[in-house]
Length: 124
View 1 (cartoon, rainbow, N blue to C red):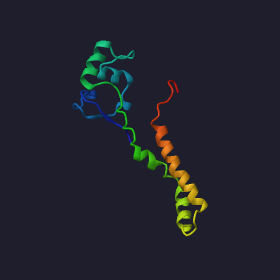
View 2 (cartoon, rainbow, N blue to C red):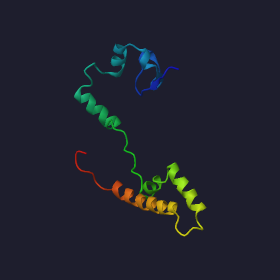
View 3 (cartoon, helix red, strand yellow):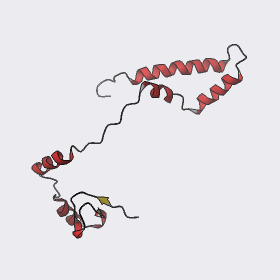
View 4 (tube, rainbow, N blue to C red):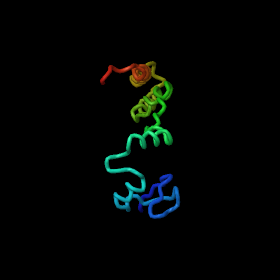
């Protein structure tokens, strides 16, 4: 399976604008000339023009998870489900050891959420 990428405005070998091009199959010199660049990169003026047209070369930042999602993330471990099963099995007992562990897990989740929103030290 050959990978091909559609590049707007590029027409190597006379193909239509925006068509899928097998860039990996072209010689490096052909790709450079078709894209209007040199081995040294873009000229400053051309880089500024492309930045104005296409925007900065940045990936969008993911949205940080909310407080509820951070808290519920603590319960995605198999041990948590084992403790829950032990609690359900020990409900008639006044205070089963697994119930104490579950209480510890729930309160620890609150602490973890609080620490997730704490700003770290610079440079760490």
